[in-house]
Image 1 (cartoon, each protein chain N blue to C red):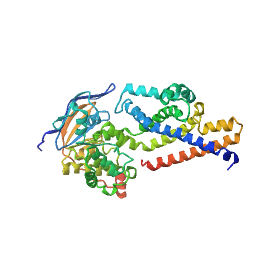
Image 2: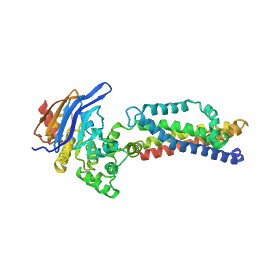
Image 3: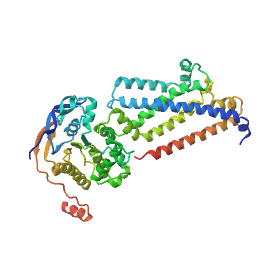
Image 4: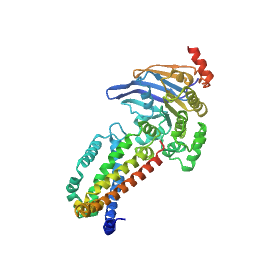
Length: 220
Length: 250
């Protein structure tokens, strides 16, 4: 273990902890909000079960707007909103607000995309068996798209890690912030490099786990 | 043969997609207990007509009756309940590929709120009927086309439907498997007394098992005729047979 890593051990562990909190909350937001929003986008699309132009266009526009913000600007732009719901705009907890917003927008698109890949005939079969919309979603659509949903969540998680690295601007901390402050700004390039290596390993692991799960649950 | 009550009746049904009229002012009575064929060129409206029968396509105007019930005026919930009494199979089988054979059949029972215990029993019964009881834990990807269609048939039969709608059920199968599936469909008709409506563009399929056939043309009914089902051709897949047929045709 390089000396410099040992010297900053405590700070690094804390930074990793902060990253896990930020990414963890983002994943939760992706699943709890992104999955329903993506499903609704799919269902309200023209020709689908809940075809509704108003709902589709509104959600579509919202997701597009959030996704087209440069993330740094989104964080800054959301400061008043963050302060409103968290009481402060500074710190790791406050940082989870803009992250959750980009997280649900990001994942909802991937959910919509996975659902669009399901052959329409499966829905015909479900409806012909007397399934309600809710039953079509839970007993057919989510079952059939499950491996795509896992692949999407894997990709999203990796993006969330990347997004979380800039949360230093609002005192969010995390690994990225550590690398900038201790590595880059204190001219300890080797420290920055080690942190990057840690992140590469982390991303590789997430990618591997996600893909393995997706392959195991895909029986198509 | 004496025909009982009509099981399905369409009255002046019209369905358009955008500015294309798929079926126009069509009226048809399908008798209880018959095997009724629908044939016509592609685009004649036969599939749309079938899909209107369980309101998979909502007609723009006209009424659809199944038994005594008018489907077109029913509430969403009542319509869903009615659909559980109408089985349907498709050209591309439309199985849930991430569910096992058993789970595919069970899902239609779950939708009908059948108790867990009875589900297992009924799933086995239906799979036994189509000769796939031993494949219960396989996934559809591990089955042949004919086996997939038989799973779809088992799924359609699970809730003891009065009617079975078949949308080009053999069109993606080879001749041998076609005979196999037609035999299963005829069995359903004979042994379970289910009324069958079958859409196909293949004349041989229609002639082999149908008792009445409606010929469609450009979204309207050209004529409905009664025929004598010619029987399902025995298909021989031996190499000798292939050689013989090749030489005969030469």
